[in-house]
Amino acid sequence: MSEPTQCRGAPGQDGQPGADGKDGTNGTNGVDGKDGKDGVDGQPGRDGVPPTGWSWVDGDGRTQSCARDAGSPDTAPTYTCTAASTGPPGTTTSAALPPLLPTSTR
Image (cartoon, rainbow, N blue to C red; front, top):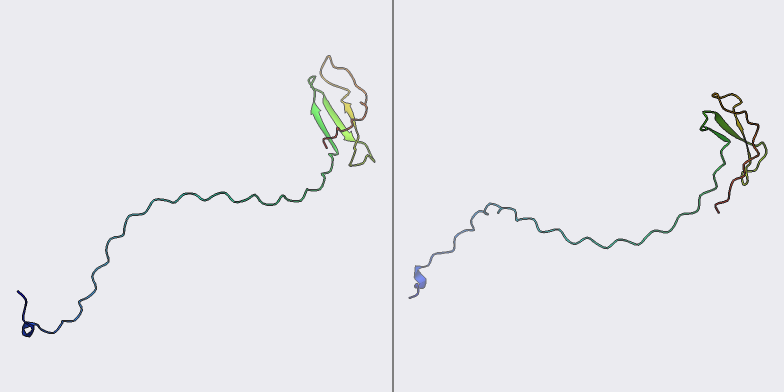
């Protein structure tokens, strides 16, 4: 059965908007992207300066000292090493050792 046309009224006004709905649940994380390409190698650094000297204490408790020889070039420095002339009982006096020559790692 259908409603006769004369029984219908005019459409009413729109109602007020409803309240916002609840937030949805978070989705799962995506898959990690591929690693990027390696960057271009940097320029080689400049050569360092050899040390002017160093010292250490040997097994007899004597201080051993090495000093760079005056005028030796940075590219092939030489050193003179000496041991203290006094030390614990049982030690010997040592004279200056011959210059040390660095070994090349290049």
